[in-house]
Image 1 (cartoon, rainbow, N blue to C red):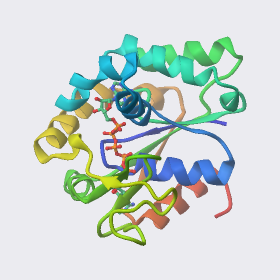
Image 2 (cartoon, rainbow, N blue to C red):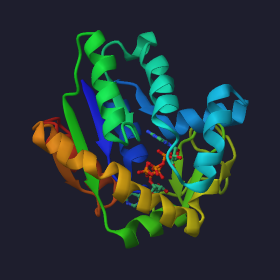
Image 3 (cartoon, protein in one colour):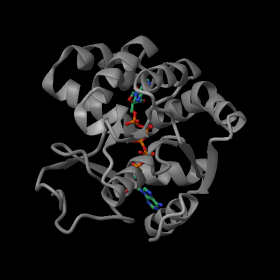
Image 4 (cartoon, rainbow, N blue to C red):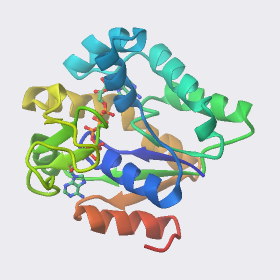
Length: 216
Ligand code: AP5
């Protein structure tokens, strides 16, 4: 199954994509994680993305599409993929259709996680991310067992540089202007399912599984 998780920054796309990936055994491909890994390693993708990410702007489509295409060519993506944070513009959506069509595939569903602006600011301000495996935690809603340490791999937890309030507000504006048009784009194709993201993590997980007709 090829799925897209859509929603504003902090809606819970990464959290739910990771849970769904475990449930389905399908790889979780997150454009933001790929860019952060590339920045950490100092690769070309990372150098190209850094200034845009620091300012809360979108990395140009050409760069993003090329990075995603390279990732989707890897053998683990052959049977399906859960996309988180990509596509984010109509041009990216068209590029994705082309990449999948070359392999005789298409997007089966797009899940839009809806949350209010107050909720996402609360979620992003308390988020902590593992430097090594990029697992996400929240100081109140999903704390690690040991403060500052990732339950999954033992890596250090840090606050993402783009989770500062000013940058978060810019990211939300960018979402409204550049990514929200995808909602109608996918609705017209009959692919969109809206998920109420205001529940706790487990509540949202159950809603997503139910929308996909999967047992909890
Ligand atoms: P990216 O990393 O994709 O960030 P984002 O889309 O802004 O989304 P986030 O990762 O901030 O939030 P999320 O929805 O995944 O929420 P999470 O599950 O972590 O992109 C970063 C930057 O990279 C962009 O600004 C851009 O520069 C660049 N970029 C990336 N992709 C690009 C693209 N396609 N094109 C161009 N540029 C691109 O949850 C947030 C917090 O809330 C966590 O602490 C979590 O524990 C908690 N939480 C989650 N769900 C719940 C819940 N239900 N209840 C309570 N707490 C919850």
